[in-house]
Length: 341
Length: 258
Image (tube, rainbow over all chains, first blue to last red; front, side, top):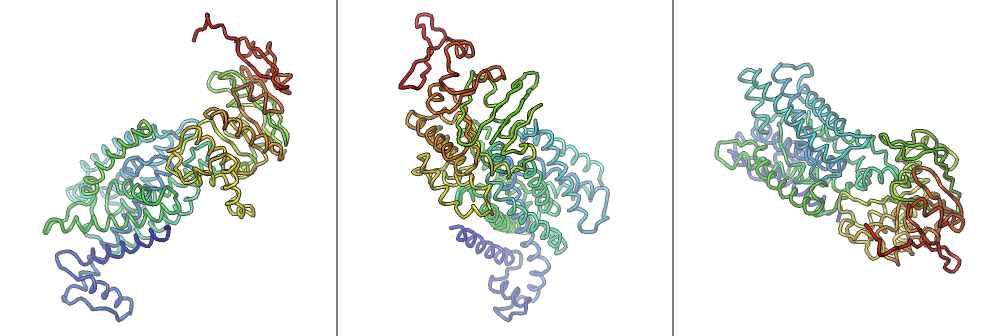
C-alpha cells in the first residue's frame, strides 16, 4: 500500500515531466523527449527529436521549466504538510500563515534595491531570511506561556499578511518600472522564463527541506496528540516546532525565490494524500512531495497552453482552484470542530 | 518512586498549590480527590512535568524531574489526560502504538506489537483497532488514551479522571487494570471524583482542598463524614458496604437547589 502510492505518484510525475516538456508552441512527441534525455546521458535509445530546433528548445527552455515546476510543487506541498503537522490544523499553509508573503517582501527588497552580493543565490537567501523572520514573528506573537494556540496563530498570520502586502505596495511605489513589473509578476506567481541557474538554487534547498521533513515525520505524528500528550510520550515540543519552522521557511524560500507566491498547493495536496493514505507523516511527507510535483507540473502545462501565445500566471490558477477548496475545508472543520480545529 | 516535596504553584494571582507533599511508592495506587478547583489536576500536571512549580521539587525514581529530557521522562512515567484530542484521523491502533515511541530504537522496541495488542485487549478497545480516533465516543477515546498510557510500560502511571466518560462496566474495568498495574510494581496516581470508586480501588486516598493536602491515608481513615462534609461544603454519609466505605451525599429533596 505504502510503496504502491509512492510508485503511482512517481510514475505520474514521470508522465507529467515528459508530457510537459513536449507541449508548447513547438510540439515534441513524448518518445522523442525521452530519446533526447537518454542520448544526453550517453544511452543510444529511442528516437531523437526530428525538428531542427527541438533539441535546443527542450534543453534551454522546456526542461528547466518543468523541473522547476516539479521542485516548487514538491517544496510547497511538503511545507504545507509539515506546517499542518506542527499546528495540528489542516488549514495551516505557508501563504495563510504569512511565510510566503514574508519571503516575498524580503525578495522584493532585494529586487528594488538591486542587491546581488550572493549572485544567483541572493534572492533565495533573502526569501529564506524573510520567511524565517515572518514565521518566527507569528510564532512568538501567538505564543502564550510556552504554548501556541492555533486560532491566535492563524489570526496573527492574517495581521502579518496585511503588513507584508503594505510593504510590497511600498516597494512597488519605490521601485522603477522594471522592478515594479518584476514584483507584480511575482505576487501573481509564474514559471515564465525559467533558467537552469534557478534550478541549481532551488533543487538543493528543496532536497534539504524534504529530507529534514522526513527526519521530523515520526515526531510530527505524535504532535497530533496535542502539546501536553506529545510531551508525555517523549517529544520536546518546543524544539520540534522550531526545527519544523526552519524547514517550512526553507521550503517556502525554495518555492518563492524564483516563482513568486503560489498559494494553496500546500493545502490541497496534503489533504488529498491524507484522504487516500491516512495521516501518518512517514508516508504523508514523501507522497505530498511527489503529489505536489505532479500537480504543479500539470498546472504549469495548463497555464502556458490554455490560451495560445499566452503564459497565464500559475499562482492565479492555483488560487482559482484552491480558494473554493479552502472554503470547503473551512465548512467541513466548522461541522466537526466548531471551526477552531 | 515519584515524590513531590513542598510544591507551590501560582497561576496569575491565584495560589493553586500551597505546600503540597506527596510520595507514591511502587506497587501502590493513590487516589487524588477533592472539590472542583482544589488543585488535583494541577498537582498531576506538576508530577507529569507539564507545570513547573514556583517552589518545591518533584523527584522521579530518585532524580529531580526537571533534570530529565522529554524522552527520558517518557520512559519513566505515562500520563492520561482528562481531555483527549487528536488533530488528524489516526486509527486506534496507531494511537495506542504512539505510546511505544519513547522506546523507539531501543531493545524494548522489539516487543512493540505484542505490547500494543496486550494494551488494547486489557482496555477492551481491540475491536475498535481499525476505527479512526475522532469517530469514537468520549468513553472509547478515553479507553484508547488509557491503552496508549499502558503501552508506554512505565514504572509510574498518572491518570487524570480516567473514568469520567465511562459506563459502570468500563469504570470498574479501567480501575481494575490500574490496580493490576500497581500490583505488578508500578506507582499509580489517579484523580477521581467518585469517592466510593476511590475507596474501592485505592491503597491510599489523598484529599486536596484549596491547594493543600487535607488528609492522606487508607480510605477507611480518610473518608470521614466530618472531613468530607467540610471539604465539599455539603453533608455526606459514609456507609459500610462489605468492608469498603461508600460515600453518599445527604439529600434534602424539599430544599434542593441547583
